[in-house]
Amino acid sequence: MRPQRDNIGAPDLPRDAAWIGEQPASMPSLTAKGPVLVHFFDYAQLNSVRTLPYLVEWDRRYQEAGLATIGVQSPRFPFGADPVNVAAGLRDLGVEFPVVVDAERELWHAYGCEGWPSLFLWTTGGALSWFHFGEGEYLATEMAIQEE
Image (tube, rainbow, N blue to C red; front, side, top):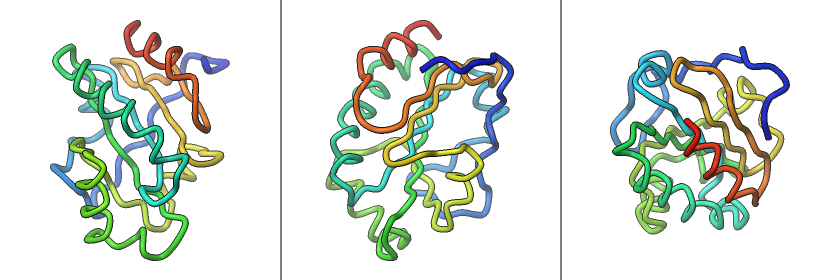
C-alpha cells in the first residue's frame, strides 16, 4: 500500500540490540545508498515463515541494484527473543540478510506494525514508499521495489 503522504521518515535501527549477521549502518546511511526493505516477522510463526522465500529472493535479485534488506525478529513467545534460537531458525530457513532481534518490540512500535508479518520499503533518501501488513501483495511489493 502506498502511504498517504510522501514525507514519512524511516525510524533508525537499534545499535544495542542483538543482530544475526552483520549489523548494518544506520537507516540514514543505508537509505543514502539506495532503497531499504524492512521486514518484521517471527521465525516461529507460520504466516511469517511463508513470506521469507519472497524476501530471500528479493534480496538476491535486487541487492546488486542497491536494495538493502533488513529483517526484524519480533517474537511472540520468549524463546523467539533468544539470539541463539533465532540464528538457528534463520539458518534453517535460508535467511542470510541481517536480522535484528527486537525482543521488547521497540522497533515494532516505532514502525507502527499491525501484525506478523509487516513490510516497509524506504526510498533512497529515507521516505516510506510502500508498506503491507500480513501475507500477500507479493507482486505489488516487487513492483514497488522495481520502481525504487
